[in-house]
Structure formats: structure tokens, C-alpha cells
Image 1 (cartoon, rainbow, N blue to C red):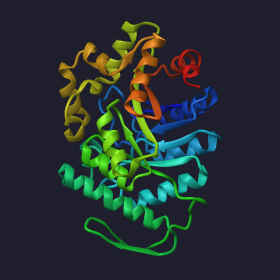
Image 2 (image 1 turned 60 degrees about the vertical axis):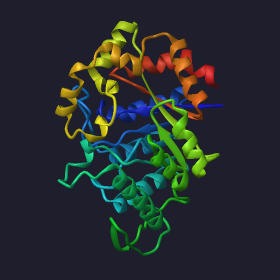
Image 3 (image 1 turned 90 degrees about the vertical axis):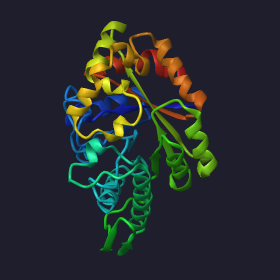
Image 4 (image 1 turned 180 degrees about the vertical axis):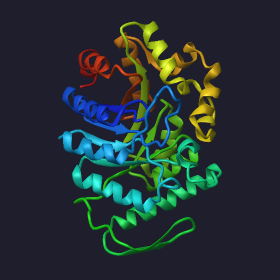
Length: 318
């Protein structure tokens, strides 16, 4: 049976609101959640982008049962993987058995900020693979040194470690990333109900590991209101191709989405109060091979979404 989780969009909500949303998600029965890790929002209308590791600490102190992962962290440029190893170990120590680390190759939007060259996709994947090796080495405890192609660590020791190291879930869209996820990851994350990346993941060693899909919706009292909100807050959902990895600031995204219409966004975002449409879209993910689907509600009305899913959607998947 598929598990239905909740997506916390750091780009759209203030940090204490994210903590409250996590509490409500746990209350109504979401067993897991993922929280985005960005430096910038996609477009200015989203309005936020708090430091995720501070928010995770507050969520750890205000929830009891819900599993939480980053969805996802890029451990290659903006933050050195040794620091990610420490942050994730601390989070897992505060949430024993409840925290997992979601990793991916990231977007230029967030990773260019220190002035480093934005590498080609294959190089970004190599950097991700090396960062995972380094993170896991540091989680072994004791003094560790590492001399890789991209990263160097000298006599580093993590003193605060959880009883067991957290799982690493790897976000992947293309076949090479999906293969890497199968080879070195503990699970797979994607945002589309597509079979091909899952098959590549499973054929490369991912058989039996969690397969997690993000699904974006906009619940509102009417479909028209939902489409308007989704278009205003999440127009980037209508972009095609590699733009989301290559544009560097929210202003560029704003220019790119100028030609995206409400209908374009509604093709990617389930809009409105028809529970059957939400259920059918979740089923698309299940049919593609996902065993975990986490739901991103666009816009400020998280409470309306919670009540709707508690009443109309979650019971169908229990």
C-alpha cells in the first residue's frame, strides 16, 4: 500500500509556519514529509526561503512520529558535504529513526551564489557521488580524512551522531542519476509519475528500496480559484526542459514564466476541490511504481488542504 506524505515548501512559507504545518500534518495522519532546501524561491511571489536546518530543528522538537527528510539538499557547492554530514547527523540525533537525507544535484538558482562555476550535468553527478561517499565516511565516527577529486577533508570528526546513520534518498530525473540512485542510494525521489527513471533505479540496485514521488496540487473551494492561485504562486510548475536547473535568479524565472498560462500550470498541478481528481493523480504515481507520494499544496491555505485531505483523500489510501 502506498504511503501518502506531505511536502513543506520552504519557498512559500515563513519558518514558524512550516513548523506549524508539520504539526498539523502529523495530527491528521501524514506519516512522513519532505521539506525543500533552497537559498532562493523560484519566483518572488513565493516570498520565502529560510535556512532549512534551523527549521528542521524546530520540527524535531514539535513532532513525535512523523518521518522527515530534505526534499532535496544539494551537497556539492553552496554547502560543503562535510557540513551537510554534520547537519544531517544532528537532525537524525534529534529525530531518532525519523530523519532521512534527500540529496540531489541541485539548481543554479541556489548553488551559484558563492560565485563558483556552475558545472555541466555529468560533472554535477560526479560531485554528488563523491559527496555521498564523504558524508557516509564521516558518519562512521572517529577522525576522518578524505582526498577526492572535488572535496578534501582533514582530520574531521563528528562527535554528535545518531544511533544509526540516516538513509540517503537520491533525487533523479535522467537515467544516469537514476542509476546512481540505485547504486549508492537508499531510495529514489522524483517529481513525475514516470516509469522509466524508476526502472533504471531498480535495475541498478534499487529493487526493494523506497520510491518517493512529489505531487503538486492546489486545493481551493473552486477550480477557478485554485488555478488562479497556482498560476500566481507556482508558475514555474509550467516550465519545460532544463530551465529549472539552469536559470540563476528568481527574476529570470519570472521572465521565463511570463508566457505560462493558468491552463499550462493546471496541466501539471491538480487544481480544485474534486477529490477524485486528486485520488486519480496519486494512482498515476502508484501505477508508475511509487510506494510513497508526498503532496505539495500550493499557496497559503494549508489548513483548507489539510481538512480536505483528511476527509476526502487520505482514507482512500489507508
